[in-house]
Length: 255
Ligand code: SAH
Image (tube, rainbow, N blue to C red):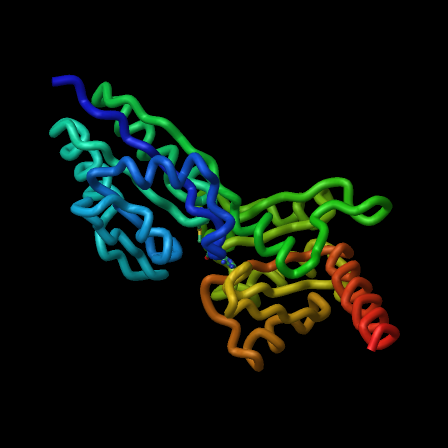
């Protein structure tokens, strides 16, 4: 029997309407659906009756199912001729380990299709009104993981990021905000650089906190910002403030 293809599918950043039509089609076709913690569970309603739903969620520091176990399960179901959808928060190839899963499948000769999703940086930036690029303010942005810091074998080059990129978006960084801030300041990022913390971006529980880089860790602590959250660092954060102000003024003028 030829193995069925496995679909590595992005579910988008949280708002269930930010999923693609192709992703919904693949979810509808699935016999087995393996989904992550960050996937909005409302999307599971698209699965056909009788489909097997498997939660593979990992909360930070705590693994429900190991990556190898997940890959073994994908392979087992595909070889059994079932249509498998691996549904991941955001985009499957942005800090989603989708590349590892694609490789594991390819090694077994199992075809795999990748359906992109709106990654949380893009979704959360839009939902909090921060343009990641903006004429005269930012001509580049980078997405970076915050869960590898100084002690790592291949450390993040904060020295280069502090100067080489206009807007930084840090995933998985809230728990290490103090270290990230220290690294950037140490490498000459101005203390007044605007920063936004976006918690549960695009969802109806989204919270956004903004402040200067040198005291952002204190603000995060005071506001109890928790996961999932993104850190956006750069002058573009000021555009949000400007937009909110203009929009408030417009409302007052109309009211
Ligand atoms: N593949 C995902 C990222 C997975 S890594 C994507 O493309 O978005 C998990 C990290 O993503 C979290 O620690 C957090 O930093 C970020 N994240 C995911 N969803 C988020 C959301 N709705 N709001 C803010 N950050 C989010």
